[in-house]
Amino acid sequence: MLDINFLKQYNVDTDTAIELFGDVGVYNETCQDFLDGIDEKLSELKKYKEQNDMANYAIYAHSIKSDARYLGFTDVAKVALDHEMAGKGNDLGFVEKNYDNFVNITNQMVNILKEYLGVNTTSNAFDNVLNNESEDIVLVADDSKLVTSFISKSIAEKYKTVIATNGLEVIDIINNYPNYHIVGVLLDLNMPKMGGFEVLDYFKEHELFSRIPVSIITGEDSKDMINKAFTYNICDMLVKPFNNKDVLTVVDKTVNFNNNQG
Image 1: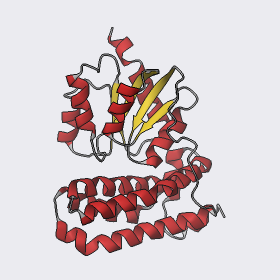
Image 2: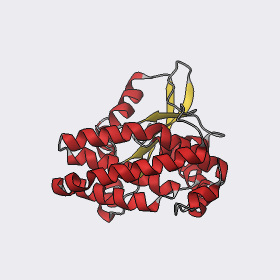
Image 3: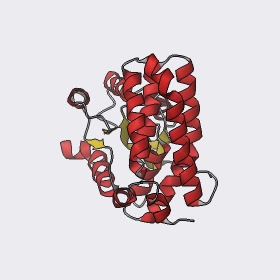
Image 4: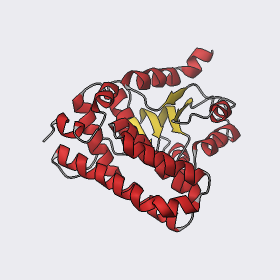
């Protein structure tokens, strides 16, 4: 189909979304990226709800919220935000009462996008591929496939990327792939299994900041969260939602940070 008016009839804010992505082609690719990853996110969301693990539940609600905002589904983003805040507040009662509605409205978004694209989910051209070639790499760590794919595409003309979906993968890539010359890291603060602050603690403990410059990816509005991030030797902060220009500006600054310090 690929008729943008189809989305507008469902009150999708496509004008803002396409302005953010730069053109409708990138928007369409990003819609596909969302579809490629949403089943896994909903599966993890359900798992953590059933385990009463509200901290990780909040992380996946946050991820769905960010994706929905990027794609212009503001109603879905508002519902996801309520679940993110309930998770952070350990409000099990709210989650139990409203979980089905959250899943249903997210699946409605999925079905609308599938009909709009007229295709099934496919593999992402920017999936993480680790090989033995020695090359300069920007390591992008975020649990949202939509975000990592968008960043990869935004900087593809200048930088190669490797993707991590949580902090444990960041540390694994740094320690176990010595042929990768990591020239910079973009690090999300909210990730499952190991979050951004734990990675920053690891960098500090192992004195890695002087060798591998780091900038933060965040959608946090909390001044305390931002101030805490800057107590570490980070370069800059990429605040969601961001556009192509924002990404390239922060990546350039990150890659050249240690050179400029001299």
